[in-house]
Picture (cartoon, rainbow, N blue to C red):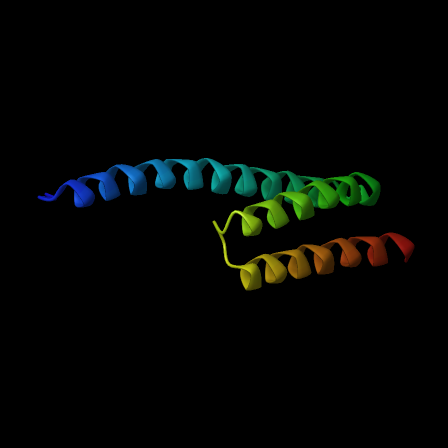
Amino acid sequence: MPHSKSAKKSVLQSEAKRLQNRTVKSALRTIIKKFAAALESGDAAAAAAVYLEAQKCIDKTAAKKVIHKGKASRMKSRLSAQLNAVKAAKKK
């Protein structure tokens, strides 16, 4: 347990930030699942639309420093590769 006033305040602040970060991460995971579902359906146009949403959500999450910018870049790259694979399969 914290003893000093500043330590007590720090505990309250970190708990508040943890809850905010949890909601942002949850929204990020939800949009990525939505993208995966769009890929599963095989509809490249729907997947492309969801990809743009996911990209925006990833960028916002990184801007809030909930995830590292390198992780955000890696996530976008992987989603893009998956989308391109579906588009390539559609052309064949």
